[in-house]
View (spheres, rainbow over the protein chains, first blue to last red):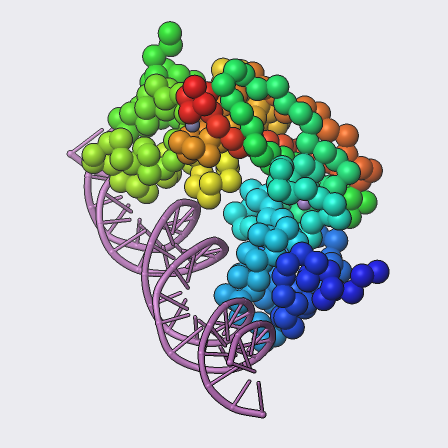
Amino acid sequence: MIPSDKFLESKGVRPTAMRLLVFQHLAKSKVAKTLSDIENAFAKADRTTLFRTLKTFEQKRVVHQIDDGSGIMKYALCEEGCNCELERDLHLHFHCTNCGETICLTEQKIPHINLPDGFVAENANLVLKGICDKCSG
Amino acid sequence: MIPSDKFLESKGVRPTAMRLLVFQHLAKSKVAKTLSDIENAFAKADRTTLFRTLKTFEQKRVVHQIDDGSGIMKYALCEEGCNCELERDLHLHFHCTNCGETICLTEQKIPHINLPDGFVAENANLVLKGICDKCSG
DNA sequence: GTAATAAATGCACTTCCATTGCATTGCCCT
DNA sequence: AGGGCAATGCAATGGAAGTGCATTTATTAC
Ligand SMILES: [Mn+2]
Ligand SMILES: [Mn+2]
Ligand SMILES: [Zn+2]
Ligand SMILES: [Zn+2]
C-alpha cells in the first residue's frame, strides 16, 4: 500500500495536510462525496480550499467529478490505471433515489454507441437511478 | 396533424396562450432549449411562468427535462408514444462541446445494463459529449 | 540562514440558475 | 353576474459554483 503522500506526489499534486485529509476521506468512502459532505467531515475546513483541492485533484486525475443529476456535483477517487484523459468516465454511476448516495460501478462499463453520421463522441456519462443494494436489502 | 391546443388538452394541460407558444416553440426546434432560451424567444414572457409551464409540461409528459452536464437544464418535447412514466428517458442525448447545443437522439436507445445484485434501476440518463454533425461538417 | 519566489489557503463577495410566496388576473362553470 | 380555481407576474430567496485579493505557508535561490 503506497502511502498517500507519495501517491499524490506521483500524480503531481503537492501533499499538503488538507489535501491528504481529503484524499484519505475519499479513499475510505465507498460512495461519491459532495463538496459539502467533505466540508462537514472536517470541522475547520474552508469551503474554497476544498473546492480548489478537488479541482486540482480532478486536473491531476486523482478524482473524477460525477454529475448524477441531483444538481450537486460529487467526487470519487479515480481507479488505478484509469485513463480519464481519454474518456473521462468509462464506468457508470448509480444514484439511489432512496438514500441519495451515488456510487461508482467501476466494473460496469459504458457500452459503445453507434452515432449518426457527423457526430463524434469524446466523452460519455451514464447515470442509472433507482434503489441501491443497501436500500433494497 | 393534430392542432396544438387539442394536443395539450389530450395531455391534460390547459392550452393557454403562453403554453401554446412554448409548445410550438419547442415543436419547431430540433435542439433542446433552456429556460433562458425560451424566455428570450418571447419578448414579454415572465421567467416564472415559463418555469412553471415547463414543470407542468414535464408532469404531464409533454416535455422531458435533460441534464446534459452543462449545469443548465434543457427541455425537449417527448416523442409520440413516449413512456416517460416508466423510464423517463430511454433515448440518449448528445451535447456538443463546440456549439453548446443538446439534441435528443431518439433513435439511439440506452442499452440495457446488468447491475450487481441488489441494485434496481428505474431510470437512466446517458449523455454523450463531443462534436455534433453541424460542427463537424 | 535569509531573501526572493511561488503555491496554497481563508475570507468576502459575486454570479447564475432554480425555486417559492403572495397578490393579482383570467378562465370556467353555475 | 358571481364564486372558485388555475394561471400569471413580480419580488424575494436559496443553493451551489466560481472569483478576487490579501495572507500564510512552502520552495527555491543566493
Ligand atoms: Mn465513478
Ligand atoms: Mn430527449
Ligand atoms: Zn440507497
Ligand atoms: Zn455543435
